[in-house]
Image (cartoon, rainbow, N blue to C red; front, side, top):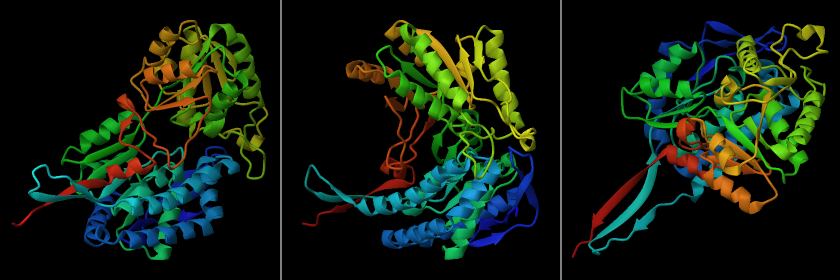
Length: 480
């Protein structure tokens, strides 16, 4: 049965007009959600603002208690939350577990982390005053979420906001609102204090601009493209605000001749074909040392050919469709541009073969491999955000480091080599917020951050709380 979801504002589920959610695999309507307007956005912000006096002064212990109640409700509703993701994204059922689990991990981690934060004393050089430094909530937070990991992205924002004492307005993408609205249902179910969490979705530019242009939010936080980040900052200039943004990536992967090629191929193909390549940290340009280029190419091809594409709740599916036909056309245009400029298409580049007839209208794109890519091609400088591996060769370490850094993006990067000294040298030279050496790991306790045009601030880890908390100094003169 297709779920019908209502927005969550001021502690109540509400909304009248509804928009449909279309499954990108089947093109069928799989749910509907209450459409928020600019007026609803203002109402959500006002509800959050009204919650500040009580929620910001609520003890950490009480906030932790509410976070644990919400975690328990999330755990009790795992099947439904994962079903929402499965329907709105056509994500393979097994892959919905990561989205779901991150929400649980975030609520648990930040509930624990906030209890470790105590005030500190500052030394007074002259001995005339006593100083204490504490941290207080910045105020209302507003979060704009990308569609690629509906609950994971929500988790990155909800956990630290609740722990820090910041009421929050969450705007999920209108492409994937069902799972976020389901979290609103759980907030209502446990009786979370009104205004502490508000969840609305609708026409993205209408309600997004209403939120960012408002003077109520103290923090605007975003997971999305660099262009969207720039737009949010422009529209947010109505007042002095904080910004925390995880934006686009153009990750290089450096595969040296002494690397474990099977490991490198496993990691690169694994993260490139997971979620249909719609991951901000996935390798966008794979630089392979010339002496092992042929061998590595064959390993990548074998893994690409083994990827099972489709949509089936019970089936053993590795990769589903991309989010919609607009995305499919954009990805294919990048591939065609590369081929026209001299790249060799050695796998994929079209709709996958062997799909069930019920999926023929779906937004499926086959796992794709391009060889001979160079910097004249759009996919060298633009984030593909699709299941396309671009192979380039190199012979000189310093030259490949310069090529790897030849991008405005600075989110993630990868190094594969058996030489630890070389790995550490390359890691120091790479201009990216994250460097993964001979593997890949992401977790709620590890900082996720970018440099250059890939964002500001931090998601995950204790560092994320810095975006939601402001330092406060209290100085008392010593009476003689």
